[in-house]
Length: 451
Ligand code: CO
Image (cartoon, rainbow, N blue to C red; front, side):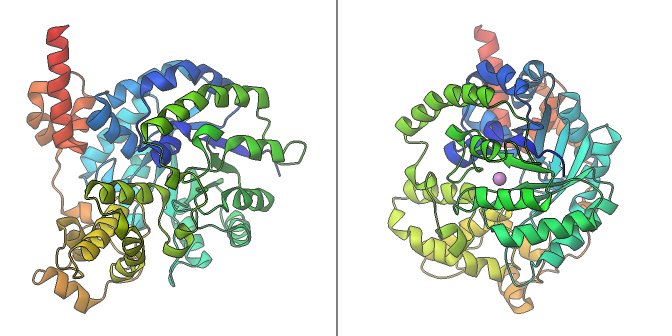
């Protein structure tokens, strides 16, 4: 076995899981060159939430952030997370939009695109994988890990083979909730390594407290790459911290070769930033420790932090446990979707509504209806017909790949944002998050006029 490769996630999943994705480009900038020099395999820097938070809350251009990072990170690969046919948004986009988005992401500096589908419907990965290959990127196909009667190791291996056959350059098990346990993961990685020719990566979270044990067993089983976050933005609902794993493997056949002193510098840099967000209340103590609820209710860290903020806003934190208990029931009703964007939001919101309204499915958001209808693709376990009829009342369910029902839409989007476009990428920003993007474009225009 060769050295274990490390993808550092502080600049994407780390701050997404711990501070609702609010780290600014300014906070990243001073440490980028050090991060580039320690020997990481890749830096994960971009994804749906980072993009959304830039536009909506930070009033930053996410494309500019990417270009800035690329300028300072010359040697290490940059990775992004893409929601398959949903791109960075919450609905399915037409194939022309997928092609353009992937093209621009690679042009602006992305090397590796990790592509997943919330339902593990591989039909929803195909366009993005093909576009990534076409523009010279590394296409990493991904399965969203979850537990259910249908989600066995055999199922994940079957999906891995399908994804390899689609032309992916590597395969990733994306365990959003930290459900992977050490011994089952050991078996899963062994079987995946035997079944696949492409490299296997593991992404987990420390939420349940098992994360670093799971990584150690995965390393023993031969996993090629793991995702960790530098300690000030690691552990809790984030990834297991980078330093202990690098330290633990020193001198073994899986030695990562990463420079410990460099890691110390990176940790020293991020520590005051962590303190700042603890003081502001954004980094909530609920997200920092071991949360065994994630095993009991199978809720990922990001979703946990969203539920906390939704309930805080409605002064209903006393309902937290009730909502957590409702989540697995809603998940079963909806065909056991893995809890990842956008299905995690659907299941989360529906659970909150079921608890707060006092009657299950009295209120059903449009997105949940669309999921039941099949507009996001196939669920692993078919949704019960009677339940579907109750939710949909009337109307046919859909069985084709959802994007096959969409007309090309890039040109329409160009027209819609024509007055505000300052760079070709703005069309994509507008298409992903129409309202916040429009607000951002207007803000940007004003700033420029006042400058
Ligand atoms: Co994650």
